Length: 444
Image 1 (cartoon, rainbow, N blue to C red):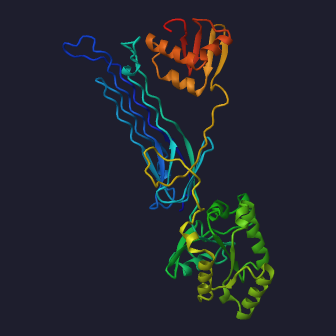
Image 2: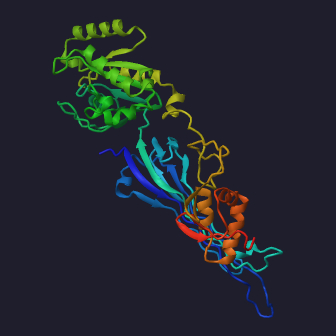
């Protein structure tokens, strides 16, 4: 079974805490602060691994967390950074984060940094100054980013075989390549895409047999709708038409129905080059097959290649293989999978030449990034990611740490915003669920 969809939870490693320590050494009375910084948490990076074929491994494991940063220690010993977690995904994987960020991993070695580890806290040595020579507080490390990712595999193939169920796609693939799809005389024999490699004139093309499409497939009918995404990356479509449908249907209507479903799924598919393969020629007379080919050329125009084929006798297979090689130039086949990557976004420390998968544009925030609200008489709440992460760094039961936090809040405008809402020294302030008494006139 081909697993082409998965949902996983990823979390960056938490940062290590800074150390509260003072130098203790014989004959050195007041040695001063020497607490080291905590290490940074590891990132989670997705890497395109050509040895993988589908997303089956994510069915067994759905949670991934990078290594935590180590805590700082005395004697200015800094904690080690947490190890990055590199998760392999097969070529052709599209990733969508909860915030809408998308990554497209199509080339071997391509990497995408999906969540960052938390920063480490600073030790008390970092807070020493001429006016504060013995700080008795240190910062805590912050947790890493986390969230759910939607993974979707879109097969990397140069050529896609499309058509109604039982049109003969699997038989053609088996004769053209070394693939061994299941072949039987009933519809929906193929229940998942099958890949094969066509070798000719020193070149290779990857050919995908896409399970049969029926009317309404783009809206979710039948099996084919689950695999329509797999034709999105192809360079060429081979529309396989049965010359002698078992149900007596009209090949022209069958052709129109499949083409409509492709267009409804993605307008780009309607613009892809086509080759018409009239299959099962061994079941009709040579005259009938030739007449059908002539009729299709008249209907679609001389620019559309129409080839009469038979997987049973091998008729037309050499012509079909040659046409596929002609329609997909060597430089396109080498870049199969949608062309250039979408942009930038790698794990930290990535080397030069590393393929990039995503691009982000950072713009200045439109506002202060926090919101102040009065929730009761003498009680206020401050919301905002920046302020919440700042407050999480300090022990609010430590007077020195609280005074330092108040000064930081003053610098970014939180104190002024509180005062505009009627705040008075000594009122309660809630940040990230923690309530404390704020008196900015003390220790500032």
